[in-house]
Length: 425
Image (tube, rainbow, N blue to C red; front, side):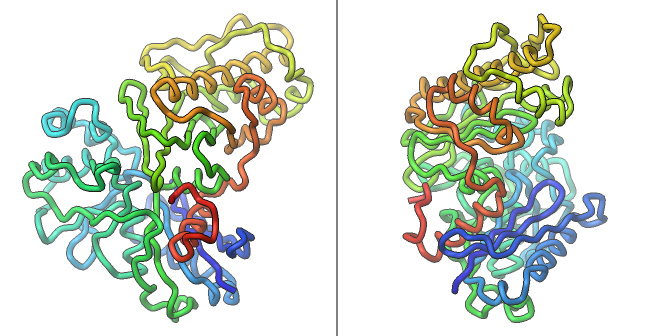
């Protein structure tokens, strides 16, 4: 039997899932690292090898391929031996705001890289605001790139999901000419398709893995979560009902619109387009505990339209489907009946979701046919029924919610491209 291992590096720890060709899970492990450790990269390395060796021996001995996902735009600079030259800059770190004006002179207007948290902004910050000496002896890598390197030993390889915020053009499959205007540019990674086999695991025997175990190119954590959810064909989408509301629609057409923070990732011959709203579960928890949400939701008549029209936000400001940094929350009037109030909140968030998908389609994306749901909100039957009524398409719970599961599918796809129907063609 052949098994496939997916490893997910999130914000506070790592998780691994081993599956067979049918998608059955054979093992799951997790590891939490110390985020305040003196060397963040060293803690990642410790987590990587620990999470592999935690897998039962009989499972490890059957792993045919491994893939790793990491947080998008978490980056580091390394020397020619792959040794980090500085502490990694995390995906959410906005210190590169200091170089945004310079970046605007390089990149086209409204390009995705013109953001303080983009990979390219962080690279430019390193080059202009630190003492690091760059050039041909230095390598720029994403988190998933470096972790995969620790297994296969080939420095300087990435995928076109992680590289999107570095400026890589996923349609032309090359770096744009303007990126080479940056002085003292380090070695940028060679870009391949996610899932591409790269090489065998070094020191596989010491890790309890087969000698011929292959490391396949990985992806970002959000794309891995999409792959895990079960969406397979154009028109299918995944909504994450977590603290915020995130929409991802599989489309035949690429859609990018900086006015709404919309951009598309390439998935083989298809595109994954979407946006993120500031509404979501965090607003609900301002008013109700998880226990109250569950009990009150049971009393909601989901087939009946709410008489309240809210715009649930924690604080002023919205990104998508309305892009207005000053948009005020609308949470009144509040009825005396908590069931009515919660009904109004859930239905209002569902309307925002519907408007988001409508906007994607207005901009040219493939028509919505089905929505898979991930995140904590997926467990609320009343909310899902409300959403199905408003979206007017089937709403289903995601097949799997762990990003590591999606990365395991990617590893399988890298070895057996016809073994499972993935939206990477």
